[in-house]
Image 1 (cartoon, rainbow, N blue to C red):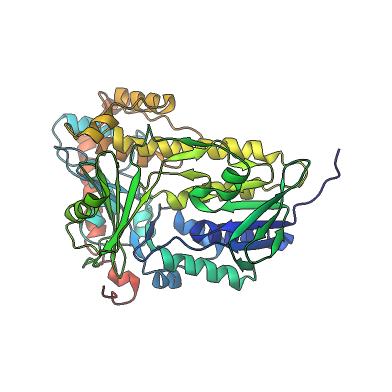
Image 2 (cartoon, rainbow, N blue to C red):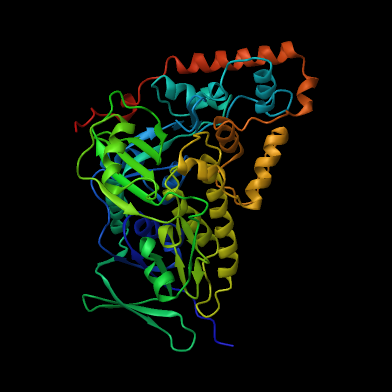
Length: 501
């Protein structure tokens, strides 16, 4: 048996947010343990107007890695987000907001949505998202920082819309202030051990050779180390998530700034609008079978109802995953590991799924990385749960007579998702698995918003007198009105005048 060899030097190669998040997370976790980190930065793929919309967990991650919110917001022209508004996925149902908060409150220890289902069946007109503080504030053009006033009623959070170039500059600046070794170069050759096949060094175009014990592939979808060099195959999810093109552009800033993003479906896909302080970032995700590239720009402008900057770019992509994420002494982070559909603002979260598991399972012995099996299981399960959540936006659509959307409703879903949908439709119960990226309220509001209304509710609801339930509903709506009314527009929280486009 080979003598144990401590992992003392990590080499991270890649670009943009995956590269710099990995560097900062590992430094924060292991700098006091003496871990040496070398970053090899490849040319950025970012363009003006690119945006990183995030989920609600992002603020907590920033605190963990030591990113100050105020300076970060100013540096990347960022805005806050209380949720995402989904529109046009049905010809009849109104838009709904997936709010970064809980909805209503349990009554007699029974989850709120069961009471809402009964009341709806009896003619109540209030929508499910009317019972969310976040959604109510977003609809009124308001923003708030969760605190004592709201915490007693609901669990409220917020996310961000981050200007991508500015955000990566912030992450890079913080990493360099931490004295992380930094090399700007292109990859020439991967050097591997002749016996075990592990990576021993990276040769760069500038003539340097960088040795290491452990290597992190943050090179994006090309997956230069894990995919190309180590031969870990890519498994397409194109049959489950059929959109394969993303157009990115930007338009003038919105005034007043909305405290939410919008995802609007159209014939060939959907268009996302993400407000920044100095512009409105646009992401149009569509199927190349249904829409040609020369038609996409015009379609995006029509759906967004704004004049877009002509410097747009169309990027092909295929949703899918590497069959494993950690092979030998190399782990892939971000799009080197998985390419997700951009819906639900999950790109940033995919980085943190990989990094959080890597920190908890960081290898001890360079010669025996048993942690890789557990890492691959955990990360794979988490990413499949994200995929299942994203699929629901497509398979639950009600846009009949349009080829893309008709196809989506016919998709044969994975067994885990099929059971979840069937159980919810039967009685409003939600099966939550280990490694869920989205919480119970996220699932419930999304399923109800897209029109999957359960046939029955929990019979425990009937133990509560109808008059008591009505009184509780009125109290909830009254409380939400009372806290939302004095809230201020988002600009008051940004602390500066809006930069003009």
